[in-house]
Amino acid sequence: MTWFMVAVVVVVAAAGFLRWRRPVWYWLTFGVVLATVRVLVRYASVMDACGLTVPPSRWRLALARVANRPVPESRPPRILRLRPTRTGLVLRLKLRPGQDAFDVAASTDRLRHSFGMYGVTSREVRSGVVEVRMTGYDVLKQVQMPAKTDTRPMRVPVALREDGSVHYRDYRAVPHGLTLGATESGKSVYQRNLVAGLAPMDVALVGIDCKQGVELFPLARRFSALADDPDTALELLEALVSHMEEVYQLIRAEQRISVAVPDAEIAADIWDLPDDIRPVPVVVLIDEVAELALFASKDEEKRRDRIITALVRLAQLGRAAGIYLEICGQRFGSELGKGITMLRAQLTGRTAHRVNDETSANMAFGDISPDAVLAAIQIPAETRGIAIAGDSTGGWHRIRAPHTSLRQAVNTCNKYADRTPDLPALAAYRPAVAALPSARVPLSKTAPATA
Ligand SMILES: Nc1ncnc2c1ncn2[C@@H]1O[C@H](COP(=O)(O)OP(=O)(O)OP(=O)(O)O)[C@@H](O)[C@H]1O
Image: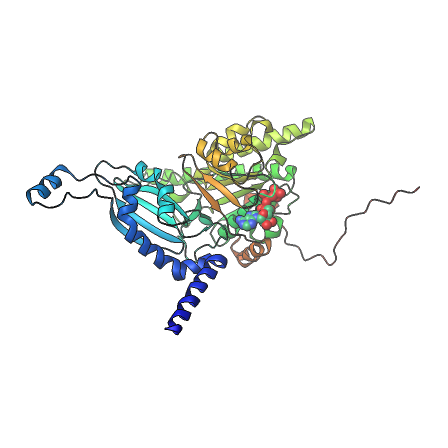
């Protein structure tokens, strides 16, 4: 008996310790079993308490009366499936007549504490069927991406959502993206994850980094073209516009051939072209976009206007040519001058890290979803890397990218350096991956004042 007691105490202590220090291990060992039992045992009573049951139908009441049986109870949605996952439980429910998905969505907070879970979200998967995703612990505290993710072309598993699912940056579904956030909010880490995710794919990476290249130049081996100042950025963007026009000519030529062949598919974008002639897609990453829009002289203003014009053309026409923009900055509003709001309207994939004020949050989501604006304002300063990701459908999620260091991203880019395609139109901007400098060069010090 004493040994049994000791074993129980050891197991309880181990569970408590894991829950405190290693929530992922706790979930995989004890949490998933306890939560499954808790949900199954309490299901009917919790649903009843949350107002998610329907009273018995008239014929069931009549049947009970005829058979002289007790009055039947109200019924909760039928459980179609209860699936344990790496981070929580997924419950698929068939709603009863008269119930709708909003009833469940409105009760997620009540379900969360009634089932003793960390978080609960719900979505309608098809008419009358709702998926309730419950997380057993704070999955965004220390992000661990699942080992296996959905691998489709131009779809990057870039972050984890608070419901434990993977957040993909899908360039074919949402071609252009805008990432905003105050300084030190996690934009660069997010962009680094994107680059590391794109590196193994058949894609050309083009970078414009006006922070003197400190973010993107270390990743140069996987980049087909890079610019680190506004003058080079302008030349590079105009070269990209020429590349885009060439791709359009290729699509036109292919269309002329297919039009003559009855029943042949007519290509509308690069993805409809045969594999052997399809141009490689291009992702253009721009860091600190405001640097491209600022000017202090007439000449700089002309350069700025040409840059914005090139960006607007790429955003409007780039998708069919397989050119995707990924723009990153602290703010991106009308104060940056003409053309900015027009450009922003084309950047439909929005991600906002912590912002300093409501105006910045509005720049990300004001035209998409008021709820997302509120969520972006509420991101706490101490949890860097947390962001709100939304798109033009109005849907949004709280996400966090894994904490990928620059070293890890450089290693990934070096590993896949041989996949870097040569784009003839951008050959002049291909970064020279020079030999390592032999010595560090200190900043020149200000001469001490002489008395
Ligand atoms: N996803 C994350 N998980 C954990 N920590 C993070 C994450 N993202 C960022 N951080 C932390 O926040 C710090 C700032 O991140 P980052 O450099 O990406 O910010 P930023 O928005 O690009 O800042 P700036 O605009 O000043 O360059 C990083 O050094 C890192 O320690």
